[in-house]
Length: 184
Image (cartoon, rainbow, N blue to C red; front, top):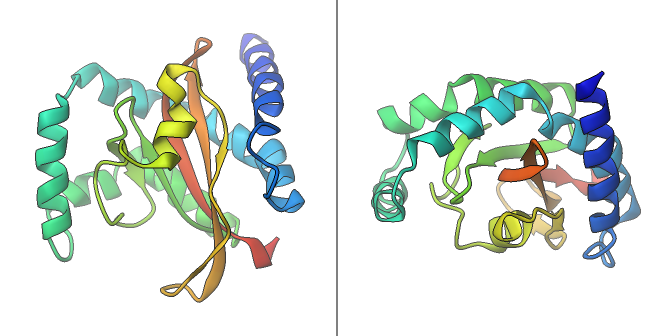
């Protein structure tokens, strides 16, 4: 019962915040965010993974060092495989498999570092990008919609939707979903 009430409160808060930056976002994407994505992000698999990563309190200097190595590494190393195959990532991959419009998804901690992902991201640290900055919103959490753009690698029109990870009424991280707008 407590989880349902918390979920409903989160939905009401995020629904209000959705309208703040959704002016040029397709209505189908806004509806998807309200009806599915917010629920997915409230999964214990995501919340517990973000909490565990935040508890490590990795310094920004260390995160940037890992990010540099990440961007310089072709393929996957042990660190990347560890993230790609954790419980959080397996949950994201199951969402992608069940929902063909989900092209990619990745979870970030309170500094923007990757916690889980469906596939290797171009960088480890998202903390300097709008998808994290505007969504995490200095711990105030708000849904952020990127612009619809053609993705060469998937030959689809994608939009990135970033939703805060909320636990106990506090924003603790963020999740970004790459959505194929033509599949909705």
